[in-house]
Length: 122
Image (cartoon, rainbow, N blue to C red; front, side, top):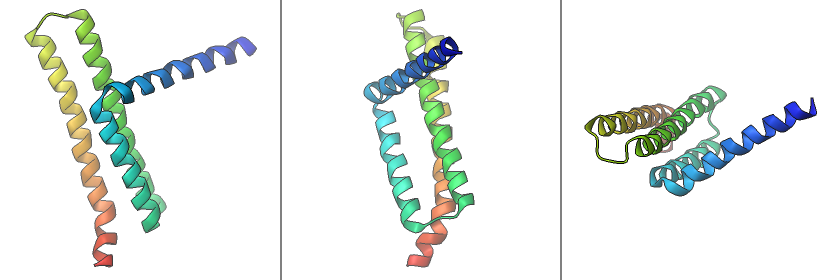
């Protein structure tokens, strides 16, 4: 049992190291961190409903997950094919496009959640 727990803790450490690398190496991840922080602060200030929190949590999670996968794909492609390759470029572009899709979806969710509150304030 102790060995099992040790292995699990090590896997969490690897994941945490990956997240630290993501934040240190990717400017877009730092933008996502700022956006995430602002969304959470505004949601707390507006005392949004539980259902709205769930929507925001899904949106934030998807953007972060796609950003992490995009970064992993980019780094793997750079190792597998350090020279320019049109196929590698396409793979990287599609992965970046997936992040963009998630970010646009998150922005739409954010508008749907926050618009009624903003409208009520003004």
